Image 1 (cartoon, rainbow, N blue to C red):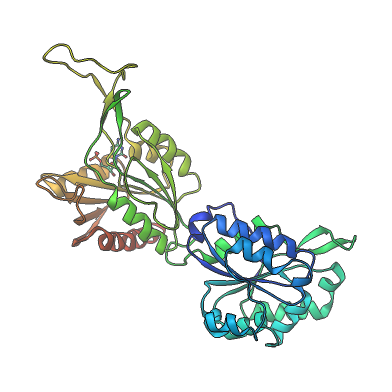
Image 2 (image 1 turned 180 degrees about the horizontal axis):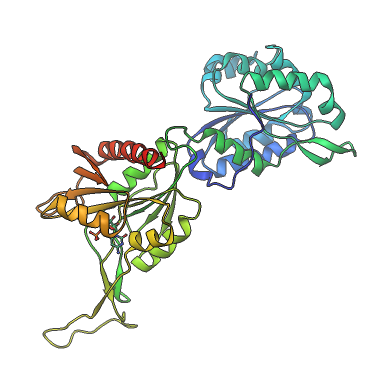
Amino acid sequence: MSESTSPSAAPVAATLYGRRILLGVCGGIAAYKAADLVRRLQDAGAEVQVVMTASAQRFVTAQTFQALSGRPVRSSLWDEAAEAAMGHIELARWPDLIVIAPASANTIARLAHGLADDLLSTLCLASDKPIAIAPAMNRLMWANPATQANLHTLNHRGVHQLGPGSGGQACGEVGEGRMWEPLQIRDAVANLLRPTGPLSNTRVVITAGPTREPIDPVRFITNRSSGKMGYALASSLTRLGAEVTLVSGPTTLPTPHGVQRIDVETAAQMLDATRSAIAGAQILVGTAAVADYRSDAPAEHKIKKQADQMALSLVRNPDILATLREADPKLFIVGFAAETEKLAEHAHGKLQRKKLDMIAANWVGAGRAFDQDDNALHVFWPGGERELPTASKVDLAGALAALIAERFHASRG
Ligand code: C5P
């Protein structure tokens, strides 16, 4: 049985980006809140197609939803022009999710009985996409055994129920039957659309890209890291169901869909941001090429050229993975080792020194790995190893993500 889906404070924008939502609006005073819901879903990057029942149009006009959604509202099975543009069967295939908000007692009853007597009910019957309903009705209609039996039927068929809440009702009564607030529905919708896989319900933090250590207001120390591996890995882990936060140094890469990104510049900022992000996380992956040293006293003003030679005084940066291992001994930590010689030996050394659970080592130098699209990895963990042969960083990230999921579950026994 599908239970009420509880709202979550998890980042939703990334999950909803580019997703297609068919929003069914039924008759009820809460229909005006559906207008806000369209906005909230669109602000998070979703495409929204509104379908109104006849009674919904007595509460809010189709023009309101059309203006907000930027798409013609559909309401009739018999609208020839709309059917010519996208037939109702095609429309039933279009969304990733059908959300009915508000869902009236009448529509709930019609869905439970498999009726197809208007466009919305026909779409629900003709679609194999997940359906979520946000009921809204008077407390006695809600409590009525007929409504409860219909909901029971729908729950058994896998229809997701979002709410209702209780409180003051439009009719002046107080009780259960208030539609959830638009933000609450948006968050629940994001939860339903989050991909499922071996890392569902797992939070992963990834550091990526280079860091920049200032020398003066216009100069800095950095390296050739493009961030491509970390970004590709963030994407792959998301596809395995993980909720991914990317703590990124400066890169020119777009944020992967489904990923929350925090931008930083220096190693110290990366450490702070990563320390905050790992609260509640189970896995930390350090793909960032963190500068080992920083200027011990960045100049306040641009340094002027003077003598033929000058020396910069540098101090060691903290090691992010080693520091956070001390802070959280249970975190599953994956490191990277970019080496120009003795790959296995150096990788094993880092695995032990930083107390990592896994390390992905690769050859660098002579045009290898850094800023390239291809890479190969040799992955080590205490008591095991696996080679992931040369492939595009995207494909390699997929293989590494699967190995991280495998080792993570093995470590949890
Ligand atoms: O010691 P080395 O820099 O080769 O270690 C590489 C691994 O350690 C990478 O996973 C990198 O992200 C991480 N690292 C770190 N903080 C540093 C230096 C490296 O987290 N200051």
